[in-house]
Image (tube, rainbow, N blue to C red; front, side, top):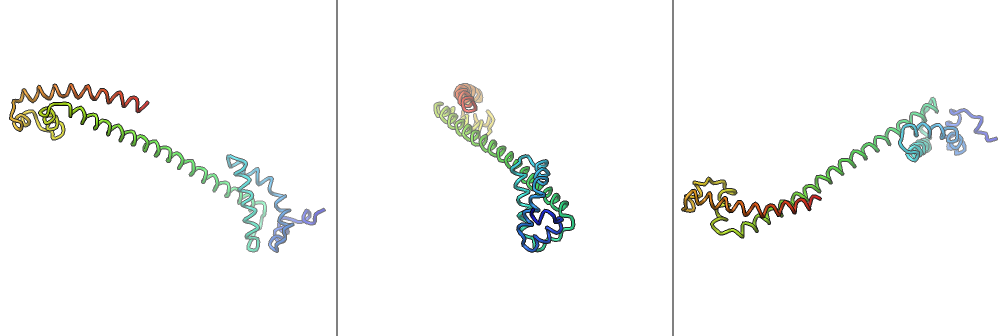
Amino acid sequence: MNRCNLQSDLELLAAIKEGDDYAFDELYNRYWQPLLQHAANILPTLADAEEVVQDLFIKIWRTRESLEIDNVGSYLHAGVRNGALSVHRTLLNKKKYKAYGSIFLASFSESIESSIFEAEKRDLLEKALAKLPALSQEMIRLKFIEGLTFKDISVKLNCSTKTVEYQLDKSKRQLKTAMQRLMVFAIMLLS
């Protein structure tokens, strides 16, 4: 029978402080199963629970010379609980950042699609405007880009207000037809 089986937890701890790896093995064998169960009750995967228990025993071995523990069982269970909570917090942060990343990527993707759509819309509008007579182009620009009134446009172009209204109405119908093609493109883009 192994000499460590008969020792108390505190005696094992004292031997571990002296560098006794057999005492360490005995402490590990006594506690790993209940500690693993404790961690598994907190964490989503058994692999995470095993890692927490393993990390705790590594910490004990590394800091063995300075350990001051009164109740070994309580210390180990508290260490597993704290380790499990730390892992749980990390997992929640990863989930939060993953969700943020997917939202960011979705908005970024929408932004790119929107930019492409706007560029296509401007391009199509410019092409449609280029097909209009020069006077109609000038009237469209004055009305919709510079925001002038019919009267201001008629004064600037030296024509009647009725001519401006007629030319703008005719031009808007031609542009509307061109823009309907854009809507077909947009539907194909969004599908």
